[in-house]
Length: 155
Ligand SMILES: [Zn+2]
Ligand SMILES: [Zn+2]
Ligand SMILES: [Zn+2]
Image: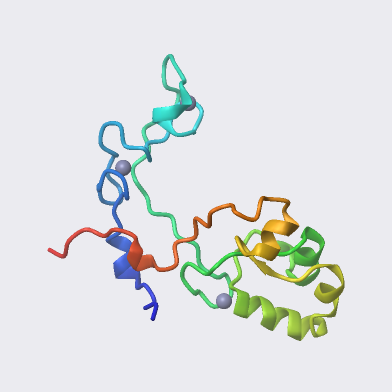
């Protein structure tokens, strides 16, 4: 069973590569260090010359459903037109969990528009890979449980 993460748990997340806490700078050669010129991965982007931006402290950004507040909802995909049909303009940049999405569909038109123009597919599912034209053996990077992410020891 997957236990739901708490806010306290999220505050204790540490960098999965170098182990620093949130708000701290990554250690030397950490793969999560962001390049100060291009914003890419610092150890691999190959930028040279003077940095233009400050070093970024480690922040464990977390997604949550904009309707029910569920932490780390599994992401799904719908065609752009379907998203625009069901989600009001000022909320289109939010994330919605699948349960809330089905609720909104149901209350809007019983899901008729989505049935015609493209229904929600979980990201990295075979049907999704087919829709976005990726090979079926593409690995799924989704972390199933927040508890698979490292946290600092309790003090
Ligand atoms: Zn790090
Ligand atoms: Zn760079
Ligand atoms: Zn939700």
